[in-house]
Image (cartoon, rainbow, N blue to C red):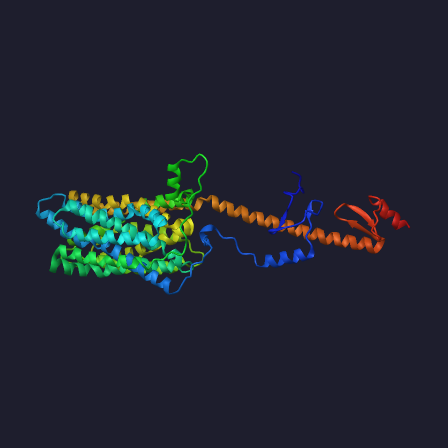
Length: 538
C-alpha cells in the first residue's frame, strides 16, 4: 500500500461517508460538510473505558425514592448478615465452655470451626450467588438467601447440644443463605448509583459495624437470661429482615446476553459460558486482584473469632465485649470515611486497599504485645478503621475493573476464593492456642498473610489489560484521523488559492477530478504547464 493510497472505496471523515473525489489521494470535503464536521467535533465526548461508563445505555439515577430504599435495604441486609457472623465470639465462648465441661481437649478449635464454617461458606458459595443473580435475578436470589439463613438459625436452636449438627445448620445452611443475600446486596448498588458509588458502599457496609456494636450486649443479655436456644431463635427472627428487604431490590440493568453458539462449541461449553461470565477472567488486573486478596485473608478473621477468649485469658476481669464493639465502631467510621475518599478524583482505590491490608496485618501482630487493656483497645480501634477501608472498597474496585455487567460475578468469585483462607484460619489459630496455651504465636502468624497479599497487589501496576490497549489504539486512530483532516483542509485551501490565482492572472482553471487544465470558457487545454506559459507570453 502506498503512502497516499485510500483504505477503501468509501472513506470516512470523522465518522461521515464522503465522496471519493481526491487530490493526490486526499479526500475532498465540501464547505457545508466541513462546517458540519467542525460543529460535531466541538461536542466530541471523552473516550471512557468500559468499566467507567454504563454499558447498558441507561445511567444510574444516583438518587430518588427507590434508590434510597435500595440503599437502606442493603444496609439492613449487610448489617444482619455480618452482625450475626462477627458476633459469633459470644457463642464461641459458650460452646467452648460446654465442650470443656464434657472433657473435649480440642474444645476451642471445634467451637471455632462452627463460626469459621459460617464465614467460609458465605464466601465459598458467593460465586454460585453471582451466577444465580445473573440467571434468576437479584430479588429472587436474595429471597432464597433470606429463607435459608432464617431456617438455618431456627434449626440450630433445637440442636445446641450436638456440635456436628451445628456445623451443618449454623455453619453451612446459614452461611449459604448469607452468601445468596450478601452478593446481590453489593451488586444492586451499581444499578442505582454511579457518581456516589463509593459513599453508598461505605454507608451500606457500615451496616455490619452498627449491628456488630448493638448485638454483643443484646446477645449477652439473651444468653445469660434465656439460654443459647432462645438466643438463636431471636437471631432467626432478626434474619427475616433479609426476606423483607429482598422485595425492594429491583434491578435496572438487563441480565447479560446469553453467548452465541459458535461452530464446534459443545453443549457443555455453551452451558458453561451461559452460566459463568468468562470475560472477567480475561482481565489480568482482576485475576491478580482475585488471587492476592484471598491470600491476604488467611489471618483476617482470627481476631474476630478469638478476641473474647484472648481478653479472658490475658486480661481477666475486663470487659470481653468491648474490643469487638470497638472494632464495629471504628470499622463503620472507616467505611464512611474511605467511601468518601474513594470517590475523590485521582484516588487509586487499589492503593487504599493495600494500605488497609498492611495496617491490619501489622496491628494483628502487635496484639500480643499489648501491655495493658487500654493499649489493646487502641490497637483494636485502629484495626477497625482499616477494616472498614478494606470492606468498603470491594464493590467499587469490582465495578472499576470489570464494569457493571461483570461486577456481580467478580464480587462472587472473589468472595468464593476467599472462603478457604477465612475458614481454615481461625481453627488453626485455635489449635495452636490449645497446644501452646498462648495467643502470641497465633496472632503473630495471622498478621503475615495480609502483608504478603498487599505487596503482591503491586503487580496490577505493571499490567495493562487488552481492553486498555484497544482504547489506546482507538485514541491514537482518532488522533491520526484528526491530523489527516487538518492536512486535507490545508490542501483544500491551497487548491482554492491556486485556482483563484490562475483564474485571475491567466483565465485558466483546474479540474481537480481529472487533473485537466481548463480555459476560462471551460474548454480543455493541453496538459502540462506549457499551456499556461503560452498564455503568459501572449
